[in-house]
Amino acid sequence: MSAKPGPRFDEMSRKWLALVERRLAYYVGLYQSGRWRRYYTPRGFATHIDDAMKAVAIWKELAGQAPAPAGENDLRPAV
Image 1 (cartoon, rainbow, N blue to C red):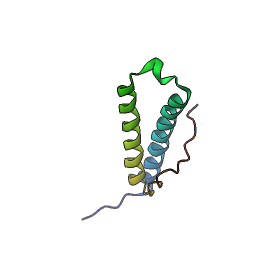
Image 2: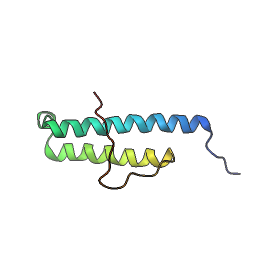
Image 3: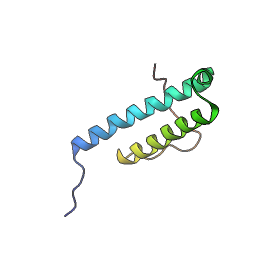
Image 4: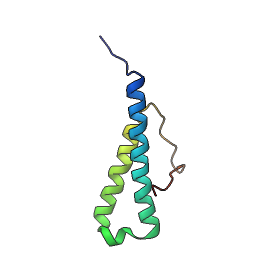
């Protein structure tokens, strides 16, 4: 017996996707402004960026969206 995700799961996965995309956009903003140096070591910051990128890819897959081609991003700042 296989169960298909219903509308409730779809809505939830889109909300989580939006959240992790905002998180990634926050880290991108930190990087672009240079403020990340105040809070992170280079290695620690790279780990956070990597984790955020993996989370976006996972939630895109769960939300049924195709991953964006390399070089194309429509990230918006979290703040």
